[in-house]
Length: 119
Image 1: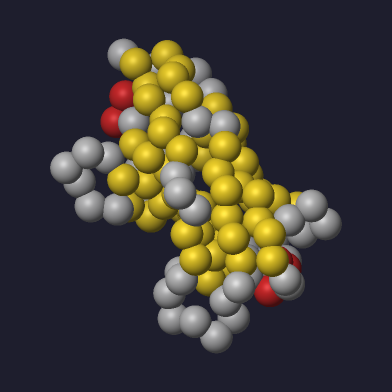
Image 2: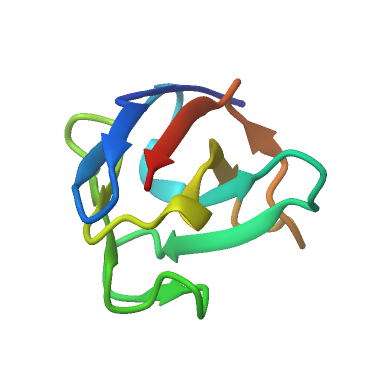
């Protein structure tokens, strides 16, 4: 199992940047694909980004491509989401998630961190 704790959210002006962090505890962090998702009020949860176990592959949602970057540090059990050129529509609770090697979907979730982008 893995436990996830996000941090780094807050209030930022449109056009600004934020860096979210996700600290993972538990065993074998490097065996998990890691991802970020977000959910705005009244909307469904949305995929933001994912990164492969060894950082060789990344994938992004269409709405954040070219603005956000996901990275991980397996030595520190950390995942990051660098968010640049933020827009008011990026306002949401951001969740870190982990998918084990054999799982079909992300099965471990953090409690979320609020990101609010003002216009």
